[in-house]
Image (cartoon, rainbow, N blue to C red; front, top):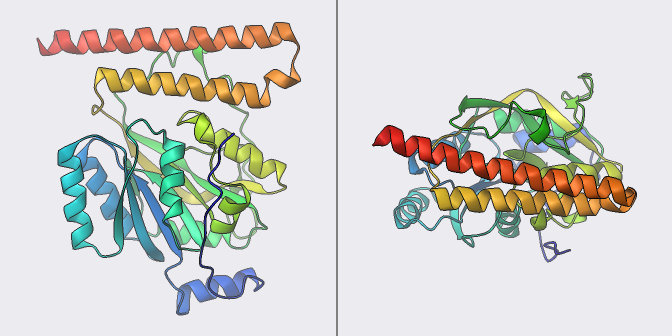
Length: 311
């Protein structure tokens, strides 16, 4: 399994200070800007610009690293102009077929902050979102990862979401929401669209598992944090608005579904197949394949219906 392991970070201040003094330094000291934000661009240019605007409006942001894995010259040009206007923003070119986990890893290699905020280019941060994440995470014992309750703004397509047969086989039951010291709630797992952790945690975990692509890397991350004796949390009063809509072509949608299947397959091999008997493993693999074929059929059907409406 391949992880990003050669990551060097500049840590400022005394790591052994108390949580309260660390947060005081973040608020009032010379090290106020401690968060590196990694934004993975989406094909919708207007959507990405809204995301970047919401990020730049935050406090405590040291730098914004934009990872562009889209093969769109117009988007590349717009992002280049944006980085020229904002000196704290940097543009990194990613591989076209890279998954979300690989894009996050690539952005983290260029980060220099004490904390990392990973966010997709279709999400909008509310006012003081970064401050809320910092105040939630700093008092917690390491390692930890914090996410948000996701709110969908607009959804055009959810393949077979109403059928239990094709539901996500790896979803875990949500834990009771018990308020914790410093704020936040325990969570079994958090959404991949917005992840916040310390750089030290990222280094200790050796990055994100890029073989999980965009479908299961966040579940893998949460499990590894739990296995390391850490905690997974959802920040209090912190929501991310995810704007979903048209943007990917049919070919890109099919590639996305295939990567999602590969990610689930890798996750299943990593955590499930070695712990079950052969019959259960065979049933699990069959369910993965049937779910993948069902989603592919629904993608094709949705694309066909959209063409008929346009025609």
